[in-house]
Every structure is written in structure tokens, then in C-alpha cells.
Length: 240
Image (tube, rainbow, N blue to C red; front, side, top):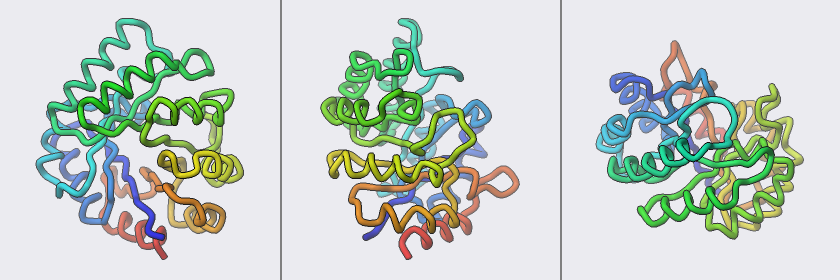
């Protein structure tokens, strides 16, 4: 079973963004998650950068835009929610294939706002990924059930608490529970310390489930930039 590879790329300047996108594409990435300010966990990039990346990489590579207006938690006030709504429209105009976002109320899904964001994204012809805010919820299974009902296309998770030092290999049991729970009704994107070594630990448990892909960032970075060779090695390990 072929597994898709999503590469998170740093998008803080046009030159660096295009270099990172090119390297990820040459290495065989299926999707690019485009984020600014990775030192803050990934924030919204400039729509002009998204447009440039979309024009630069092959059309079969999906370009996803992070929509997160500030660092910290995932509970948005009305002004921030308006920024997110407008940014979704801006990213659609820039040619993005998908939005990566999410909203919580405390440690529970903000169902009303998340549902609206998913609908806006879908109406604009894009896919919606609920990001690792999922790992900040008290009950992932309940959140997954709600996200499926709302029409969410993908969720990103390590199966471990958001903000902890643990990665996907630590959350393997929870990831398996999630994979069994969604029954192919949405895509589970496994992120959090994804590398060749962690893929080899995760695949024996997860390989029997459909609709699972993998998301990597730091393991494919050399001297601050995405490296095509490391992306290719990870892609090959994923599909060995």
C-alpha cells in the first residue's frame, strides 16, 4: 500500500520558500504544508508566497496553507476568527489546494467555528486539515467523530499531548485507536518527529489501515532548508 508523504516547509521569505518547495517536490513529496514562523509552531504564511509556490511546483503536488494567526492556544476571539475567515478566502485566491487550521474552546472542539471554517474551505474548492489542535483536546475520539460529521478531510496528530516532548512513536497506541476509529472516513496524517527511524517503528502497527499518510519537517532539514535527498530517503522508507 502506497503511503503519501506530506512535507512541512518553512515559508518566511519568498526565496527560501521556493527553495524549500522545490526540494520537497524533487524529493517526492505528495503535499506541502506551508508555514511561517516555525519557531512558533507554524503560523500563517503570506498568500503571495502560496501563489508563488503553487505556480512553481507540479500540479499533482498539493499546496496546503497553514491558517493560524498567532502562537499559543487555538481558542480564537471574534477578531481572530474574522482574520481566519478572510485568510481562507485569500488562500483560495492564491491557488492553495487546502487549508490547515482548527479551533478549540478550552480543551474541546469549537464545533460551531470549526464547522464554519470547514464549510468555507470546501465551498472554495479546497480540502481542510484539522491540525494538531486535535492533540490539545481532552477526547480525541469524540473530536474525530465530530470532525467526520462536519466533513473534515484530514486530521494531523502525533497521538501525544500538544506541547509535550513526545512524538508519534510515543503515541502509537493512540494513533492505532484513531486509525481504527475513522474507518477510512477521513485521512489521518501522522506527524511529530517523523523520520526514517520512526517510520520503521510505526509502519508495522499502522500499515493495515487505509487513509494514513505521514508528515515530516525537522528530519528533512539541512542547514535550515528542506533537503530533496532526505525527503527521497523518507519517501522510500515509507513505501518499502
